[in-house]
Length: 242
Image (cartoon, rainbow, N blue to C red; front, top):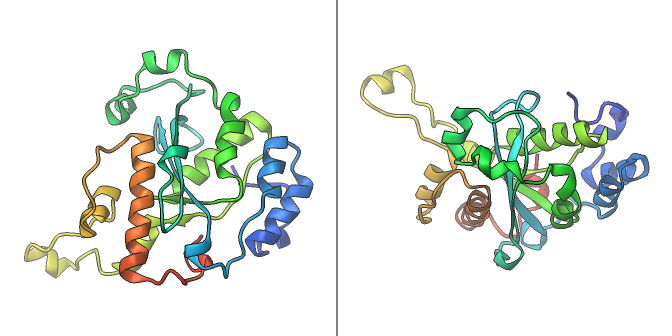
């Protein structure tokens, strides 16, 4: 499923702020129109001045077309502060059944989702925290793809937005993380860029994994550490987003 099947190819290649302007005029769902109208900061905005929101989903699996979102965590932040007072967490009812493997993974059970809202019931609350902010995730192929598919299903429209991916930053910083065959023979192991392992490299505390809100907070802290150790607060946000 494409992110925006009706969008002209020329629009997809515009800078993100201009894409938002074009999408604001074509979006039919009010929640999406408001999202695009809130705008996107220019690519040359220093990362220290960019409003961001760390976003994490727990899902029933890894394929957006075959699995569903079961919880959402988000927390607005800047390089200076994580706004815990504005953090949000929802358990949502998936449109596809839970599988035992996913229950074991994230701990969300049938009892948890029986009275949980459908994503459509909380979209305005979710977007109230997303509007005007650059989403920050750890592994962009989950949040961006799952949200797009979920909105296509509920609104008949997908969504496009840039993300800062802390996993992609770690991959960039450690291009030799996969040792050669000969190095593996002498015992050298691959360097993990998973969220918990990446945080350990920066001396960040261990948090329990697979809770959407905790993982969102962990992602925000990881980006702050990455910028502090490897970049400048004046680095343009456009150098990070994908």
